[in-house]
Image (cartoon, rainbow, N blue to C red; front, side, top):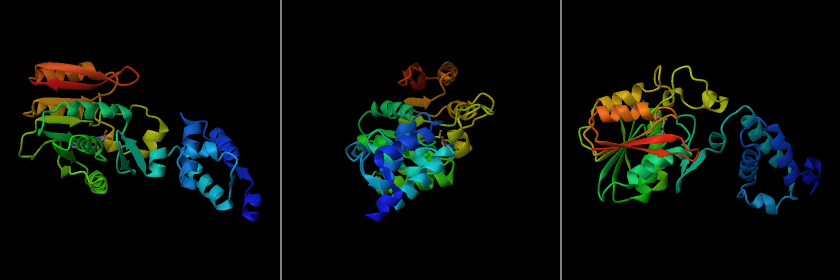
Amino acid sequence: MPEVAAAGRSVVDALRDATSALAASETPRLDAELLLAEVLGVARERLVVDAQAQLNRAQLTAFHALLARREAREPVAYILGRKDFRRITLSVDRRVLIPRPETELLVEAGLSSPVGASVVDVGTGSGAVALALKSERPDLAVWGVDVDADALVVARENGLRLGVGVEFVQADLLDGLDRRFDAVLANLPYVAAGAELPPDVARYEPASALFAGADGLDVIRRLVGNRPDTDLMALEVGFDQADAVAALLLEAGFSSVERLRDLAGHERVVVARR
Ligand SMILES: C[S@@+](CC[C@H](N)C(=O)[O-])C[C@H]1O[C@@H](n2cnc3c(N)ncnc32)[C@H](O)[C@@H]1O
């Protein structure tokens, strides 16, 4: 195969070169493997088995194009156009925040809902929380709300593709939604204005999904201050915001507050109950 000879790069060599090119990433080897697996149309695990296989010129060119995007700090999830979240895979692009592992705690809070309860995911973005919850608890009536029409397009497409029946609605928090929800889950913007973020986030993810005023709590304060009539409210917060948000929830009349920790041990979700 003349193409192979011209390209002259095995999977193992290409991965080694790519890993050093991506040294600025937190996970250079993983990123390189995900991008090469995408180009070859195989599962990442297959790269170990095919370590000595040669890349043809087209494959090498395609791999270098994806690497260049990652070297410019574009997140892997945007390059691939998808992100796994609990048991589902969401399509993502720059219109929506990339779902994070700690946000799975919000889904866990929602799973405690009684059979047939109504649950709303406020600031749904890609639809991650609402769709994961409904896919695991089809008995629940799940809604997803976002103020951003572009994000809702992505969320609705994810719902259709996954065949998961969530009602997606455009609204500013819960304003104008003329109904009660048994549980309110929300991963709203909570980054303080001017905070320094990694380039992958700052350059590519939507600012409207991140920033919320001087202390990062403007949007959460407004949601809690509106005192929604609900039995449970679970809010994702920044690693140093749990105390402030717990106080807001108690002031708003909730009787008990619990904090859930992420894998790093930080309190990242505050759950309040009536
Ligand atoms: C941090 S992102 C979370 C996205 C998704 N829930 C997730 O966890 O991946 C915050 C989302 O809240 C939305 N948002 C911001 N302000 C809002 C508001 N006032 N009302 C409703 N949604 C809002 C943004 O458009 C964005 O999609």
